[in-house]
Amino acid sequence: MAIPTETQVLEWFESLSNWGRWGGDDQLGCLNLITPEKRKRAAALVQEGVPVSCARPITTEMAPDISFQVQRYMVDSGEG
Image (cartoon, rainbow, N blue to C red; front, side, top):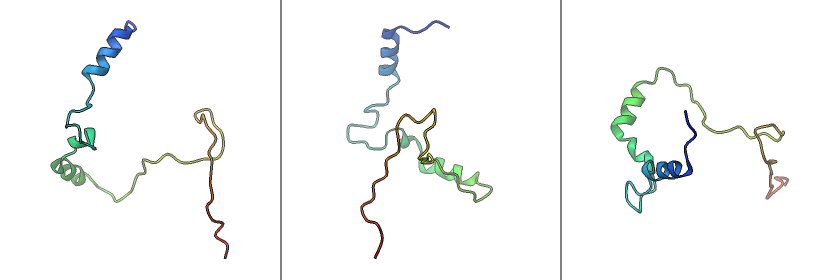
């Protein structure tokens, strides 16, 4: 497979963009595709009540995939 040219990539950005698809005031973007009917169908697929977090765990240790050091700010010590 050939490496795409800059022109091709820029054309893809334009042709595949959803920017403005639902109007200028829209705040949901592609979440508009998740209709009440789709939520109902998805809920019917649940077999166990096990929650799955989509959050990324916060670690204070550096790792190859972490390009910045975590910073923690305390507003109050919580002491008396």
